[in-house]
Every structure is written in structure tokens, then in C-alpha cells.
Image (tube, rainbow, N blue to C red; front, top):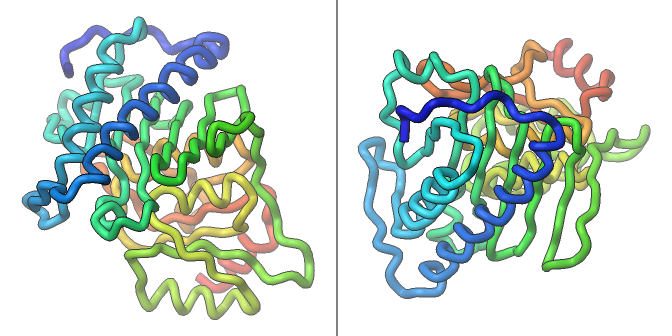
Length: 280
């Protein structure tokens, strides 16, 4: 899987076809997850870092890796469930697939439906294609470089999505993690003044900003690259930005694969960015 010869970067036309294939692959992985979600035994174990692992994580991983391996475009694959690839090898990758087969395992275990399948194509450190599929909710967010960002719910027609800036005098809609909270985020929210807090799990938090259902998502706690890459691609194509506190876009395929603290918002929201700079 890691010794494949890489294809050249796809053109925009090729990206459109590739996006359709990845949407179908994410849905196939989601169907496998749902079979286990409906069962009584998740086969829960723990990884070396004590994070949970289920049969659903592994089933989705196998389907995605097999599906990506059948594509005409050959890129290396980095999945959360197969991440022990030396940086000495990864650093040579100009393009690769970055996968979280089941983002939000804690939400899966709680049976609250707020978990996703995340598949991203990363090119020179930038996510240029992303699919985020929530199988319980039957909602799929997807985007590819130069093609815009889209959502499909419950098999209904596909709709394009755009980020939004809150109107003057209206409360800011802020997304918060369902399973992770901290004092610094609470303090930041207080500085925003009047705001409405929307709780959500997994990478759906970024997608709520992408579709304009929320204006801002600050993440001041730890995350990994596979947690954000697919949704980051969607946010970018929807007119938003995923950046660190210095307003630099997140980069991918770093040596330790950890994200810095980050902010998600419309890229033209200069007033909010100024407030965050002044308070930093």
C-alpha cells in the first residue's frame, strides 16, 4: 500500500470524477459501520493511547483502503488505523489519501449518530478533495478543488453550500465539541459576547461552518490531521478557512501528524479575526 508509484496530480475535470467515486466509497464504508451500529456488540477495545477502537473502525478502514486501491489514480494511503508509516517515507509523498474511517468513535459508542467517515486527498500539504459522510444522519458533505462545496441529505438533490458571516447585531453561532470541552474555549466564548452555542461531535463541527449553519468553530484542544483534512477541503471550497491562531492555514503530513489549535470561519470575516487577534 505504501510502495505504490504515485500518479500525477489530477486535473480539475479528473477531480470531479474522483470526487464522485470517493462519495460512493464513503457511503459503502458508512453502510458497513451501520451494520455494527445496529448490533449489540461493538467489539470495543483500546489503542495504545487509550482511545477507543471498535469493529466498525476496522471494517470501514478495510473497505476504504480496498476501494482506494482499485482507483486508476494511485496514491499512498495514510489511515488512522494504519498510521505507523515512517516520516522518512511519508515526507516524499506529494499527494496521498488521508483517512479517518470512523471519526467520532466516542459518539459511535454513545449511539448519538454524530460520527463520520472522512476521506481526503492531500496535495503538497493542502487538502484538495474531501468527503465527510455521517451514515446515521444520512448527510454527506463533499468538495474538490475548483468545483465548490456541496451537501446531500437523505438522498435529496445535491445543494451547494457557502460559509456565512453573522449579521451585525445578531449573536454569533459558535460550534462546540460534544465530547471535548476546556476552560480556554469557555473563556473565548465569553469574550465573543452574545452568542449561540451549537454542540456537535466529530468533523461535523467544521461542516456546520461550511454550510453556513454556524459562523465560528474554535478548537483549542488536541486533534490529529485525519480528524480535519476532509472537512477542511469542504470548508475551503465553501469560502471558509481553517487556520491556526496566527491565521495560517493548517498543513498536512507533518512529522507528528498533530494539528495545532485552530479556528474555522468565513475567510472574509475580518471583524471576528481582528477581535481574536486583539484578545490573543
